[in-house]
Image 1 (cartoon, rainbow, N blue to C red):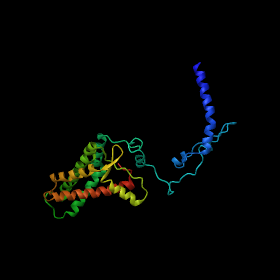
Image 2: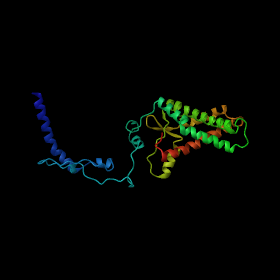
Image 3: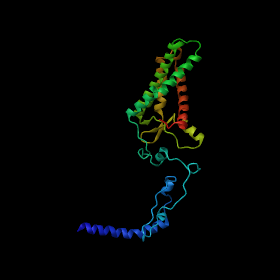
Image 4: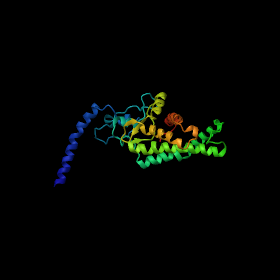
Length: 261
């Protein structure tokens, strides 16, 4: 007995709601539509059944699509979502890295082919400009291996601390997240700032102490394997500055040519 009564009640509510919905749709109080949100996505429109006074266009009025090339178009990114939902990392579509994930990222930044080849290129350049054969680094294959090993050790130390240990302790996200800017210089400025500004695991921003301290630790530790004349504090500071400058250039490259890491 209860089911027929409930069904009749639902039918009555639906019948009373239909005229009200039609009046609201005619006034169109909403300043946005699904087409505006999805930048031109076409929604299927079905013909109303015979005898039913219902017009889909009255509920979702057609609006011209916004082309991606127009000045008013802006790509939606995780940065936009974080601006709207500061605590909503899930809403931004960004999953925080676990400590294991940060360790794997540091390993990849040290021992994958690209960083190893970059270290080899740096070792070759060092041999090219080091014509006085300073003690500790020779020329030839042995000298190349020592220079290459020193660079790999520097990268391994900085990424162990700057990509894994400190980000895990401080809750920093060591990945590079591209901006949602369109202006060339805005993007360059954003990329350069990521050397000292980082995203947190909660979706906010913070001083990138993980990266800065990681570089400082690596620069200081490298005195253990550097040749004698490169083991001073001044040389360690020079290594820190050089690595910091290369970080800025690397971030700019990631901003324009990759999707980050």
